[in-house]
Amino acid sequence: MYIGIDVGGTNLVAGLVDENGKILHKASCPVDKSMTAEELTRQLAKLSLQAAKEADCPLSEIQAAGVGLPGLVSNKTGMVIKTTNMPFYNTPFREIFQEDLKIPVYLGNDADCAAVGEYWAGSAKGFDPALVITLGTGIGSGMVRGGKLYIGHGGAGMEAGHMIIHPNGVRCGCGNLGCWEQYGSATALVRLTREEMEYNRDSMLWQLCDGDTRKLEGRTTFQAVREGDATARKALDRYLEGLSMGLINLVNVLFPEIVCLGGGISNADDDLLLNPLRELVHRGSFDKDHLPHIERASLGNDAGVVGAAMLCNMF
Image (cartoon, rainbow, N blue to C red):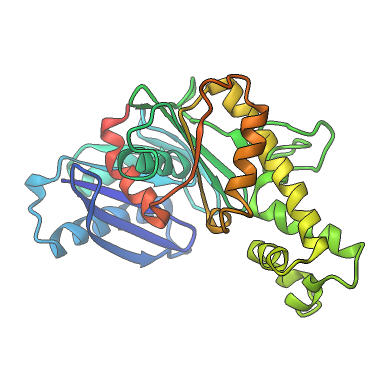
């Protein structure tokens, strides 16, 4: 048995996971923003104990725990170097955690854990290399190659969302101009839709958001396209171009057997997202004899828990 811990911006989740990547039980609680890094670490150990206890699983049967965090971690040293909207900064996470729960502890960032989860028990099972891309506020990315998680020289894994696809393009939160996530994330789709709406005040999109573009969501664009709105169609075409450009670059460098797309955007109907995306990526792929599968990730919010639990097998 394993414990997988997913540290989100609003909730903490610890799951008891078997060797096949099946979640047997989960325990969760809201994030307490007032906690220090040490307090939050101990809270995660407590939540892990709760998950095991509620599932009647003796601690002696738990082989390891894994933790997925939204930021930069070092599994080698057991340190959480820095995170977004979390108190961790050069925190000796493993040391603190093991004071309360004396089992092996592995660290990964949240995108890497999602990749491991899909590889172990989701849409990428049986494929290698497997590339998992999560489309959200930004773009998360992780890759499994040769049965192991790719973490790079410094252990930070992949940050494909920050490869530059438009020199001197839109400024990214990282400070660079033209990063992929400014053109391929869910946030990018909303921005592109707003831009197109300004050119067409008669678009159905204005009705769908009650005249307030702050109410726009990614699904709004897909809804308007489905109903035949030309402005939404143009915004989606621009989005698909940007998303496919980054994927083509990754495919031609890494040659994955499968690319899995996760995040809310990936739930759009196949004829509006996956089918045209496959066509664009395959058209731009160099190796036409070994085109990658492009599929929707299947584990949803459970990918992080499953992937974190399986980290002990991935280094």
